[in-house]
Image (cartoon, rainbow, N blue to C red; front, top):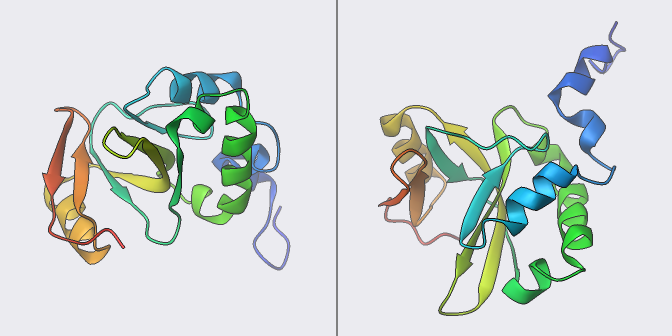
Length: 147
């Protein structure tokens, strides 16, 4: 049953129940075990195909060492709390990639878009430098500035 704002029992199947609670160990393990980059849902699932496209306005930059320190879980939980609305959208993932030149990790909310053409168009619209082809493990440049 839903209330006047559309909230109801089916909301808990979309990840709502994960926001505000400590993340599952599976999510944290995925992040720690993929130091070059990761995409993971709040339930701990990783995409096996499709294209990852970041959602503007949800990026945070931190030192790679901080994410992989004992503070890492609280950093990720804080990120999830700050970006809960975006992370509750269908297809949303916590995404991150490590820039070895700067030693920084870029966290973002990303969507897994199944079709190449649609993903490239979304990347262009979202002003992304590149999108990520999950199956091939490669970036596809989209010409944006990333801002």
